[in-house]
Every structure is written in structure tokens, then in C-alpha cells.
Amino acid sequence: MPSHRDEESAHLCLGRLVNRFGDDNERVMALIGLMKEADATDDATLEVVLKEYEALLQENPTNIPIVKRRVALLRSIGRIPDAVTALTGLLDFSPTDSEAWSELSDIYFSQGLYSQAIFALEEVLVLQPNAWNNRGAAPHVHQIGIGDQNDSAKQLAEALKRFCRSIELCDDYLRGYYGLKLTTTQLLNDPPKPSKQAESDGLSPPNLSTLQKLDGLATEKLGEITRRFTAGERGWRGFEEAEIVAARELLEKSSSTTVR
Image (cartoon, rainbow, N blue to C red; front, top):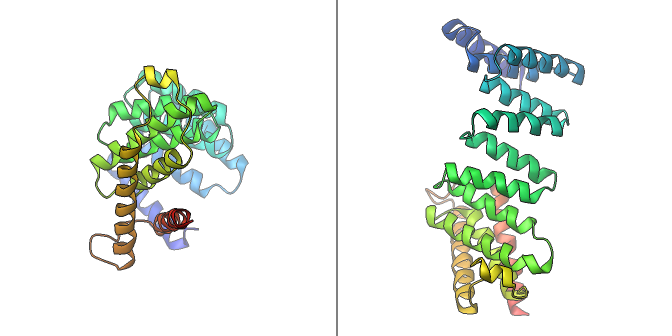
């Protein structure tokens, strides 16, 4: 929870922005709305803020900062279908908004609509082809969204390809190596049945030798990251503690399985 002093500072900063740019500036309007959301103490107050957003959008439907605040508020109060409708409406007049596509993908994913989530995330990758964090998110959705056995080979191969691309773009991308390790382990321990559809699409998993090399690469890099982070080495402190713990547990699990 923010302290009283934090709230005072936020209001002070907002006041200076209003004085500098005016309260009719679109970004300032969104910040004013955000402040009202933060100050709200119940759902009824949030509904009032929502109505204010809708009134502003009646005057200017293309006010993107307000559209995004409305989407965020709709999602926070559980009105998911309305949030999706608002996002798709935004993307109709601003189809290159990668932030909106990413939010839409996250909403679809949270609702278990994996094919829609993948589609939206693909749009993000088109707009931001060198963003390794998005490259790492896409295969995760592919993995979670694996359906029947006939489709798993294609999905795992797609996930593998995308994890490899994410670590190619960022050599120390922990989540990329983590995903790569998970995928290679699954393919090595429980390889899916060959799929004619996957083969025709060029998305069959690589051969055993390649999988073993990729697994070794992921294992080595995860070991290095966890070791150097734990040692507190300069330049290796920017990872989240939870990610390091998860990586260490994955390595330990893999090691114990190998010993058996």
C-alpha cells in the first residue's frame, strides 16, 4: 500500500503536470483518471470513474490514453468481455499499437483462449521483432495451449524455435533458457508421436542429437546465471529472485532425474 507521503507526492506531481500541459492534454487526462482510480475506496467509486472515461470518449473516441485506462479499469473490476471489446475497437483505428495487442493476448490467455492469445502475440512480434521478452512469451503460450497428442509435436517444435530465437536476441535471457530447458526435457523424455501436419508445416521437432545439444546449452547457461547471481557478481544482479529459485529447482529436478 502506498504511504500518505507517496499519495501527497503523486498529487503534487500531477498538479504540476496539469499546470504545465493543461487538463485537456490526453496523457494528463489519463493520469488524472489513474489518480482517481487509486483514490477509489469501493467499486461504486470506480464505476463513477468508468463513466467519466466513457463521457470523455464520447467527445473523442480516439483518445488512446483514455481508451487504455478504460480497458485496464474494466479488467480490474472483472468486466472481461467489455475489456476485449474496447481493445479490439482500439486496434481497429490503431492496428500498430503493440501494447494493445500484448494486453489483448494476456486477457485471452487468462481466459484459456490460447489460439486467440497466440494470434494477438504474433501481432506483437511483427511489430517488435527484436523484443526478446515477447519472443520468450510466445512459446510459453504455445506450451500451455497444447491440445491433443496429434498437435503437440507442432506446438513443441514451435515453442522450441521461439525460445531459441529469444536467447539469440539476448544471451542472458533467463526465461528463454528456462523455457528451452523445459521444452527439450519434454521432447527428450516424452517425445510426441510424429504428425503429418507438423511435417508438412515444417514444424517437426529436431533430431535427438540437436535436442541433446540444446538441452546441454540451456543447462549450462541456467547454471551460470544462478551461480553468478548467487555470488552477487557485478552485472548479474538484475534477475528476479523468484526466477532464480525456479531455475535452480528446474536444474535440481533435471539432475535427479538424470541420476535415476
